[in-house]
Amino acid sequence: MEQRGFGRLRLPGLLALLAALGVLVVQAALERRKAQTPRISASRNQNLWPLPVSAMTTPRLLYLSPGNFFFGHSPSSKAGPSCAILQEAFRRYYAYIFGFDKWPLDSDNVARKMKLQKLEVSVIMDPECDSFPSITSDESYNLLVQGPVATLTANRVWGVLRGLETFSQLIYQHSSGTFTANESNIVDSPRFPHRGILIDTSRHFLPVKTILKTLDAMAFNKFNVLHWHIVDDQSFPYQSITFPELSNKGSYSLSHVYTPNDVHTVVEYARFRGIRVLPEFDSPGHTASWGKGQKDVLTPCYHSREPSGTFGPINPILNSTYSFLSKLFKEIGTVFPDEFIHLGGDEVDFNCWKSNPAVLHFMRNKGFGKKFEKLQSFYMQKVLDMISAMKKRSIVWQEVYDDEGKLTPGTVVQVWKKDKFHMKLRKITAAGFPVIISAPWYLDLISYGEDWTGYYSVEPLNFAGTPKQKQLVIGGEACIWGEYVDATNLTPRLWLEKNMISKLPDFRLWSESSVCSQYAIKCYPLNIHSFKDEETGFERLTCQGSDEASISRKSMMTKHTCKDLNSFGSSRKPTLVTFSLLNILTPYLSSRCRRGHKLVFTSSDESSDYERSSKQLLMRSHSHKELD
Image (cartoon, rainbow, N blue to C red; front, side, top):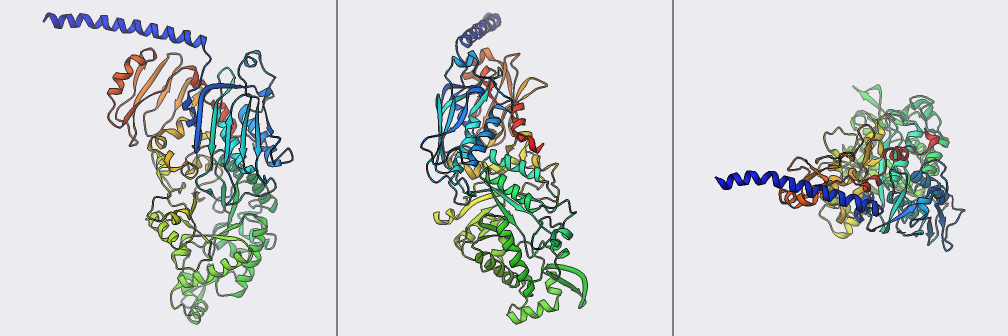
C-alpha cells in the first residue's frame, strides 16, 4: 500500500520534471535558432514532381535576390540568345519563381549570404530551337545548383525546358520574402517518351484560352503530348480550309470553331513548352457532324428496305469517300506538324451498314460475307495507307487491332478498355505494335474518395511479356472526355484543386518504377504542394487517405501519426504533443506504431516557411496575364 501511495506521489514530480525539461529544450532551441541560419532538410529533394532519376541535395542554403539573378547561356552552348524557345522560357520561369513585380537589387541581408546569382544553360548538341518536339525528342538534363552559378546541361532545348521546371521547384520563399535553394545535383530523364492528356472539344467546346492554360499545367508536370480529340458526333469545330462547310454546318455555331490561326496558336504555344499536339479525327464512327457539311460522306440507313432518313458511319463503299478523306487528311497533315495523326476507329455501330442494300452487295462482292469487322478493316486500311503516303504515322484505338485489321507496320495502338487491359498489352506487343496505355486513366468517369491513389498505383509494364515487348509500350495518356466537362470544370477534373498539382499518371510515366513506392503514392503528391490557409494561419498538408497534419506556429504544437507503408489507411488517430517534448516522447510514440508503420512528424519551425505560399501557387496557375 505504501508503495502504491508513494507511486501516486511520484507522478506529479515526474510531470514537473518533464515540464522543466521541456522548458529547457525550448530555450535551447530558441537560442540555436537565433544563432543559426534556417536550413532546409536534405530530404527536400523529394519535393520535386515528378521524381527525377537521381537527386542529391545538401542542407547548405543559397540565397537568391530577384533583382540580381538571371538566366544565361554558357559560352560553349550550341544555343544562344537567338533561340526563341529558351529566351521565352527564361522570361516565363523568372516570373514563376519571383512573380511579376519589379525587384530592387540585393538587400544588405541577402548580400552578406552565399548567393546564387545565375543559372547558366548549356545545350550540347543541335538545339532544335526551330523544330517541333517529336516522339524521339531528348528530354534528359543535368542540373547542378551551387553558388554563385548553377548549371543546367542538356542535349537539346527540350531537356532544358524540363530542367527549368525542376529548378523552379527547388526554390522556396521565406515568410520574410527571402528566396533560397539548397545545393543540389540532379540527373534526370523520362521513363516513357509519350506522356499525354486527351481533351475533347466536340462534346463541349473549349475556348483557346482554356487549352493554353491546360498546356501550362502540363508543362508544370512534364507531360509532353496534348491529344486533341477535336471533332466527334456532336460537333465539327475544326475550320477546314479545303472543306469550310464542315464547320459552317457541323459546329455548334460559327463562334464555336477553331480557325487556322487558333490551331497555329495552340501548336506554337505547345512547342514553346516542349509539348506535341496530336490531332484526332475519329472515323468511320463518331462522324455524325461530318455529314452536315459534306454530302454523301455518311452511310444512308434503311428500314424495311426503304431509306429511313437517318445516317450511320462513314460510307466505306464509295470512291468519293476516299477522295474527300485524302484531301482532308493532307490538309490536317500540313496544319498539324506532328508526325502522328490519330485515326480513331473505335465504337463503330454496324446496324446502319447491315440495313443498307448497297453495302451488303459490296460485301458479297468482296467476299466479306456478313463479317462487318472486315468492312471496317477494309476502310481503315485505306485510311492508313493515305497517312503512310503522306510520310506520317498513325495511331488507332484498340478496336482496329481487335477486329483483325491489317495495320501498317509501326501503327500505334491505344488501349482504352479497362477489362483485362494487361492481357491486351501482352497480345498487341507480341504482334510487334507499339502501344499507348489509357485504360486505367479515364478521368471523366465518376469516382469517389481518393481516386488519385488508383491512378498512381498503376504500373504500365505489369504484364507478362519479354523485354522487347515492354519496350513497345511508348507511354500513356489520361483521357478526359467532354460529355460532362467544359471550360468551367476541366481544370479541377484534371488537376488537384487550384495549384495545378497533377493527379495524373505523370508520376508513373516520367519517374522510374523503383521510385514509385506505396509511401510516395500515398502522401507525396500533396505533401510537397502544401499551402498556407490564410484564414486559419495553419500550414495544411492535405494528404488524402491518411491522417492530415496541421501546424500552428503560434502554439508551437505538432501532430504525429503512424503512417502505414503498405496500405492507404492509418491505424491510429493523430496525437497532439508539445514540440518541446518530441525528443523525449519519440521513442515511446514510435513503439506504439504497428509493424509496417513509421512515425512521421510535421514540425512548425521556420523551415516550413520555405514551402511555396498559396499566393505563389495561384500565380503559377494563372501566370500568363494575357490569358486572364
